[in-house]
Image (cartoon, rainbow, N blue to C red; front, side):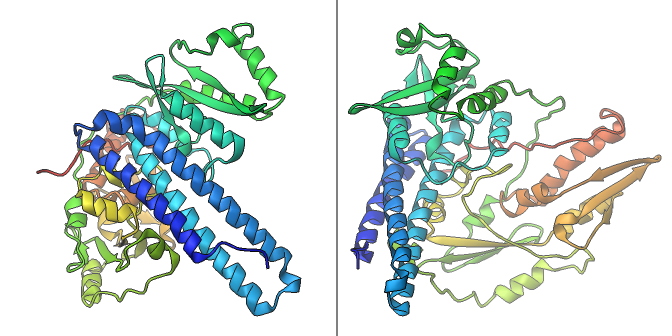
Length: 463
């Protein structure tokens, strides 16, 4: 049988990636705490992480090729041998995929630092599908060489999208200090002899002078896009998406709100004390620390961990008092990004616990009962309709013949059971909108799409 990757080979690759990802995490801590190494961390983070993810993607493709070979030999292999080979290969692929995902969550945390003043643009990124694991081949190599050699374009910092999951329009953003994101660029790579030619197609709010201007001066921008489209047919649509993102309008109604978070509940968790309830007993956290050391060992096989003895007692507290709205939503405090979440890295928790969460050394399960949140709405004159499925719950209130309705409450609930916001603070955000409707500031018949932007990314543990 064709030589396949051994467990030792896979572990060696994962161990090498883990060492680099740990360095990247350390750089993020330098940024978070504004250490003396802040400048070096900002300039070194992206090339280091990009190289790591590119290598991991190459190894992932090698394992995919081995999978194809195993399948092609199915008719010639004994059933037990084939099953063992394909099962082992699937485990290897899963581990490598999860390592790439961990790397991209670190990339999300890095990019968040630069998108803090451009949350509406970030919302639009989330409207697009994920770009997948990581770029490979000539395109990937071209992008990595670009970011290594062009992190500063005419005084603007280049934020590379490939190392993130949340930045999905274009291949890089341009950040202006004190202003925020002012441009988006799409990279196209082609092999020219023994070299790779990379073209950056930029949509920007400001004029940018680049070293390549003289080369492209014989063509107008539109002419260059048409020329490149012969080799890259998707480029015109990609440029349209960039243009829409750069022309996004801010909301007509906005307000600032200082919310309380319960990061102390997360911080109270430990191997000796793995259970914790939030202030109003609507959220139960249950933490399980791995007894394994390396990232490969943690990811390769599922680890059985017994449930804490006091779990049932804590769960009973979660369901008090009796309520027609008692329900259980099971989730996890993870590092995956989508609207309206904020990266766990910027939470006010210890660096050690933060590292454990990112590197899967601890799994924090969440059990949320929405009854107390719903009761706050009921106490303010709303009635709960469509109680059947939690995702279908709606809230209605009729005042002076005018009906006010809240549709999906998933965003509000996620603020509590994942973002660790206090229940009262979440309701206070909704109450701000309710008051504006009832005071006439928002006219009758208006549909409001709420976008809640969490901006406490600068908080950090106290000494």
